[in-house]
Each structure stands twice: as C-alpha cells, then as structure tokens.
Image 1: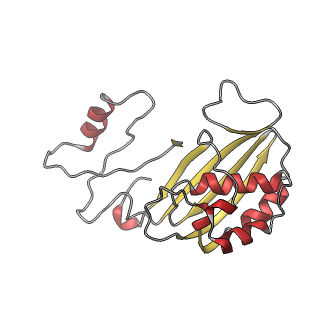
Image 2 (image 1 turned 135 degrees about the vertical axis):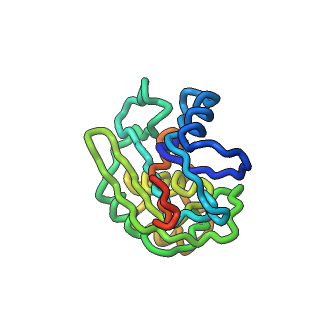
Image 3 (image 1 turned 90 degrees about the vertical axis):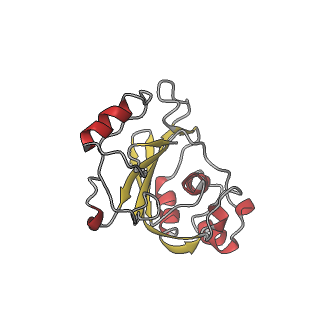
Length: 198
C-alpha cells in the first residue's frame, strides 16, 4: 500500500517553528517518505479519530501482460474486465452497510458498519482506477471491495452479487483480497476548525 498523503500527530514539549519540524524530520526519513508541513493542534485533536472521511484509489492494469517498471505500484488483471458491470456493482456499496464480508480476520475495528459516500470507477486505455470515499475503512476493506468488483468485471458473478455479500456478512463468500501494489491513500478530510492544510 502507498500513501500520497498521511496525517500524524504527536505530543511534545519541544518548541520549534513548523518549518524546523519539517526540515528536521525529513533529514532522518528515507527517500520514499517526506513531511510536507507541520501544524500545531489542540490536545483534543487525533489524526485518526478526528478524520471525517478518507479517500482511497486502487490503480489496476488490465491487459494480458503484467507491468514491469510499475509492478510495485499497480494491481494487475490479465482477463478483460467489463467496466460498466463493475460500476453497477460498485454503486451497491454506497451508503451505510455492515461490511463484515469485506474485512480481514485481523481487523480490530469495534464495528463493521461504515458509510461509503462515493465509489467511482475510471477507465483510461489499459488502466482502471477504483476511487472510494468513506467515513472510515476496515482492515483490507478496499482491497476486498476491488477483488469482488474484479470478479464481477470478468463475469464470474453478476453485479447483484454485491448485495448478497453485504447481506451474508461472511468474508468466506467474497472474492480473495486483491494485492496491495495498486492501493493509495489519496485524501483525509477534517473539520475546518482544525485549520489543517490538507
């Protein structure tokens, strides 16, 4: 999995200007990670629990031959996928549902109920992108949703299968978890009162 954006918080008694936190932390991070900004927040802010919504994007290469240079940054399906069938199925995920059939066995969330605000599928040439925005996600939820949509796209199940899976609340009934290579955390939304530059 990758992140184009992530927000973290920490407690400290050290006093530094925001630019010093950015430069100092970046000096110690590996090349694949960079701090873009620093912002002081009140004690009741929590990077995870104060978030109102998150958006993930899954990038999939849909062609007979796997990727080479981008192999670590794209999912891959060699069979042709019907994008319209997948869009019909994805629409069934929108709304508040019990996503038990799409959570990993290691998920520690207290409730499997999540609200999916939007689920779009964009296709450009040999690439298909699954963009899903929700109030929160369960462990492996996005990869499990994508795996299920791929099954629908290749004709293994009709779009209505999604409704059956949601009603079943049984992870064993859904498609296998898709690989992590194409998954990106795209956006985290917070209330304006936190004044975060995200």
